[in-house]
Amino acid sequence: MSDATGAAELLLGLPGFRVLGVHEEPGEVIVVIELVADLVGCPGCGVVARAHGRADVDYRDLPAFGRPARLRWRKRRYRCEERRCTIATWSESSPAFSARCLLTHRAGRECCRQVGLNARPVAQMTRELGVSWDTVMDAVREHGEPLVDDPERVGEVRQLGIDETNFLAATKDHATLFATGIVDLERRIVIDVVPGNNAQSLGAWLDHQPPSWISGIRVVATDLAESYRSALDGRLDHAIRVADPFHVVRLANRCLDQVRRRVQNATLGHRGRRRDPLYRIRKLMLAGAERLEGAAVDRMLLGIRLGDPEDEVLGAWLAKESVRDVYLAASVDDAQLLIDKAITGCTEDSVAEVRSLGRTLARWRAEIVNRHRTGASNGPTEGLNLLVKKVKRAGHGFRSFANYRLRILLHAGGVRWTETRPPTPTIRSRSPR
Ligand SMILES: [Zn+2]
Image (cartoon, rainbow, N blue to C red; front, side):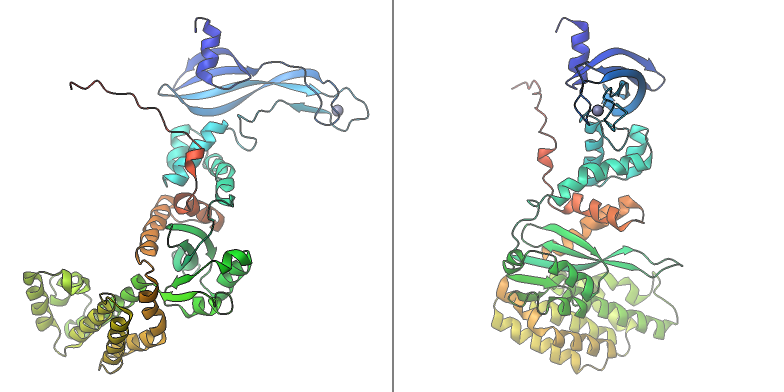
């Protein structure tokens, strides 16, 4: 490219635009551009329009060679000469520029990739591009909503997972606000997030899905929430219901924690401290027994002997292990035997918390055993919870549910990002070989 003006256009990479000048101002590069003039018809009546002055409009583009770049578009204004036309004046527009905010299309798309795909805080993009928080978030919505709404994003689902997540932690003004995550357990993606954790919100969402999509679902895994169970009744009766193993084990872990705290309080008169025998072994107790090595087991048993005079913590630990054993079973028959042992053991226990665990296990017995009939994986909801946490950390507490949903789906919803940016060709390094 020998023509200097042509070289500038090549670098700019916006077909139809001409570069009028490039200069540097403190901290950024300014590229003054215009649309190549053409005969312009009125968008209302099609009559050839008349030029009617210009106005400079500044847009933020992606950085150019390491410096922030600002495109100063010398926009022409036009007037319609046709007297019967209702359109008086308008100014130039281009699909390369956002209609909603002062970003180029490509800068907006990059905001969406960074905030969505990479779960970066909006505030970081705000600083990098020198635009407002609203501008970045407008771009995330403009580019992200079509990706999330793409009917191809989810497709057919055979194993559905339903899981509660908290959307907003409690403050002095409101209790914890919950949301319900709906996931595809096989593709490991979040299909949707709906506000609330009650039967109505999940039921309404299910009613909204095409019947053919619903009938393709073979397995539904939920946590142990009665609200979800009742939302599924009558809507997904054809699918096998599974209690998500991660949540079943977590329930047993929580029972153990409760008993440990209560015993700590009763024996020591205060909450756990670093040197308290039970507090010191709290993590060892939560680990699966099969994962502990000899010395760790000795340490744990010593802690229990020191801090648990009535063997209540020991009882809760054994109950927790009996629940874990169910998932070590190799067959449905073994699983049935082991869950019945766990239920009997828990419901006959002398500790109230363990009896309560036993009653919950009994209510969900069929769903717990079903896990062995379907082979539904227990990884996905746990893994997706971590992704959701990452988005939440980047969001520093969401105020808008719509933004929360959008960002979770962009990050973990199986969005096809490859179509938004082709891979960068590699530059090969010169290797001595
Ligand atoms: Zn007109």
